[in-house]
Image (cartoon, rainbow, N blue to C red; front, side, top):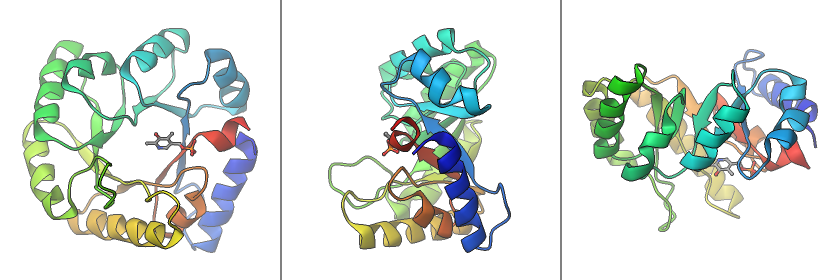
Length: 209
Ligand SMILES: *Cc1c(COP(=O)(O)O)cnc(C)c1O
């Protein structure tokens, strides 16, 4: 696939789901790709938000690719939050102490990233806040002055039925909390995620193959 093909599949999935055209935004996952690869496979086709999962890699690429909207999709670590300066949206907030440290850093940065709460998908080794604890985290983080825009979830690996259930859970929870952004769907499952209301799809491999 290529980026134009992914975009046309996104538009097609919106139609099938009877959702407005362009209600889903492509977030291009660029982890492990060089700036030249990113220019050729992504930025040559227009302006897109780019997402990285390692703080230092993101910081270095921000220098090489200025004027880009950056998102962070990796596991947060207290001592590496400092690399997230200039990030527009963090998809992976799971802990109030990380939010407090981000709010503190944001004062010196002069701008704060918006955040999504990463929901646990039931896989033991995966990060995420339990569905039952998401509302409490949402209220705690909001009081710290960070804007919670929505939730993020990853489908369990190699489990299509699990994906359906996982996306449905996230859709319901975002609705319950009154949050508008739903980050879910990757190269293998973004059409399904769009049927469940995804507003941000995080696609990597399909853009570069
Ligand atoms: C790598 C990654 C993606 C993109 O996955 P692809 O299978 O390459 O499309 C999306 N979300 C997260 C959190 C990732 O780490």
